[in-house]
Length: 187
Image (cartoon, rainbow, N blue to C red; front, side, top):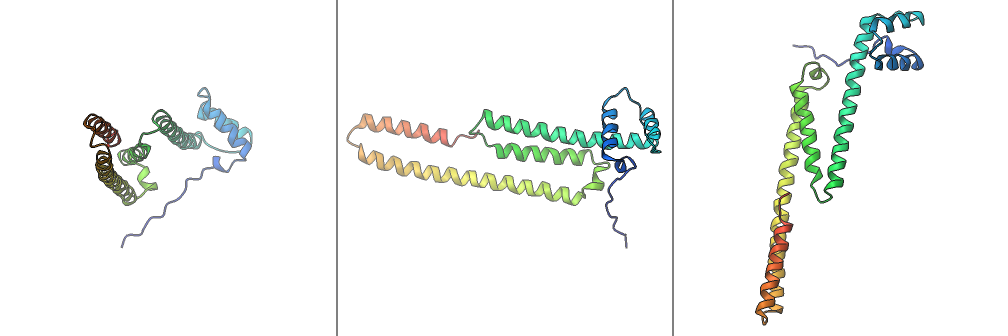
């Protein structure tokens, strides 16, 4: 029987540095003129024996986390801009597409990511998003049916009121048809 592997967090010597010194290392890493060897020597001068390889691994983890935050921030800003530019737009669809895109990217660039997210969990999330899309489409279809019934009833009632004026009846029918078409348009 296979032993289930538990996930472990990566914890390096750099993570154990005092906060002030770790922030200094982060600033040094942001300046590409500082080599990992230079940062390692600096840390040794400060009393911490940390190899340049450890600095490099820490930098890769830090850069990955920073990149994820920047990507999430950019996606959120795009979604906010879509909502601002199109107040009547279906921004839930945009959010679903952004989430689906993130999951697809996660699967496509699996490598170490699969250690952090089990494949079955990614599959469940994709299935959940698919169900959400199906539900959303069903609600939209139901709303179209209800709007169609409401417009038919409204047209019948209004036509009953103005049936003696054929010109006005035709104009009203055109107005109602245009309003119905606009309301039921797919964006």
